[in-house]
Length: 142
Image (tube, rainbow, N blue to C red; front, top):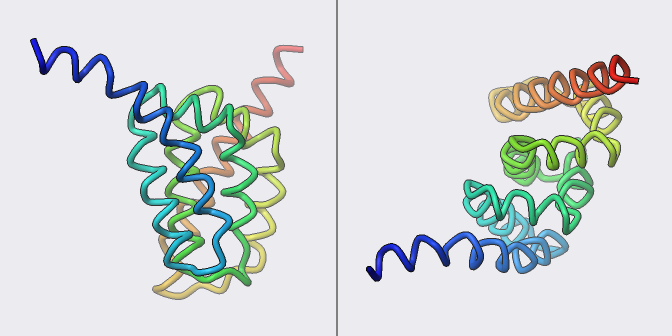
């Protein structure tokens, strides 16, 4: 009985915690930003939290972190969180709407290939493909 109640409450608690994670993305210290991205990524495993993150503006905050001048670890964490966010229609639409294609293209054009950036480049390419597919589908629908 208690387990069932906990399972029913968990998505609501996770969705309510999204705002705290998004606030960490504005921190000056890379460690705090990575902590916010990591916690957000974990919360977004639940659909309710993922949709809440899309509604609260996670996409522009995460996209702002995807720049070659940003700490490589922060970029990797931000791209990981963006991948999870793009796992729902609302999240993918938010990434596309908030300039995801341009940001990802800019990052890919400027990123230097190295073992430290290999995962980030791969994630950015996958995200760019998903955003491009959404744009093509939207154009075909109109």
